[in-house]
Image (cartoon, rainbow, N blue to C red; front, side, top):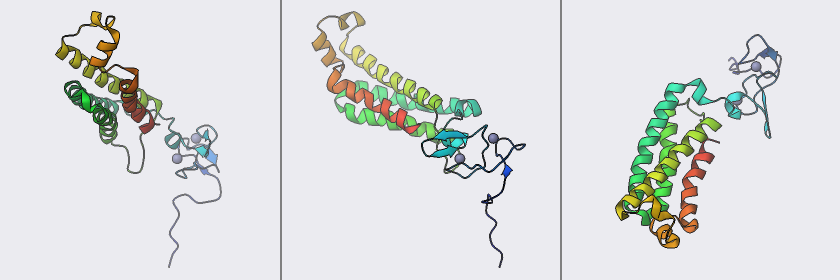
Length: 187
Ligand SMILES: [Zn+2]
Ligand SMILES: [Zn+2]
């Protein structure tokens, strides 16, 4: 009976996964990939490879896929924004749908390797912009339905704010929800 060969031998220097010319004993604390001082990223939970530390920008590594993911997110944000605009009383559910719908669609379309979690500031930024678009769209729909134009926003503020679901509490809290979801998901 032969011992199964471990994927990465536990001792001895091995070539860095990023820089094959560099021998290293350092390993990513999450996936165990050999990393060298040049590509290792110091995190609170030890040294990690760029993928596990989330420092490799997916938008740079795979711009086409990122674009497709952003497109899918935009479709979901449009649907959620329209729904929110027509049925604003259900804003809690629209907020959840907008947040989770956009990020999960993006994750699906990013189609990263199994077990890997897409993350990065680029994805956070893209997702937040898409979510904001969905919310602006919902308010535009409400304004359209009520016949309110931008000039009226200055007058009768409390009434207009209420009508447009722009009160700090609870409306802006609901608006923060999808932004938070987008930020946390790709962190
Ligand atoms: Zn790793
Ligand atoms: Zn390296």
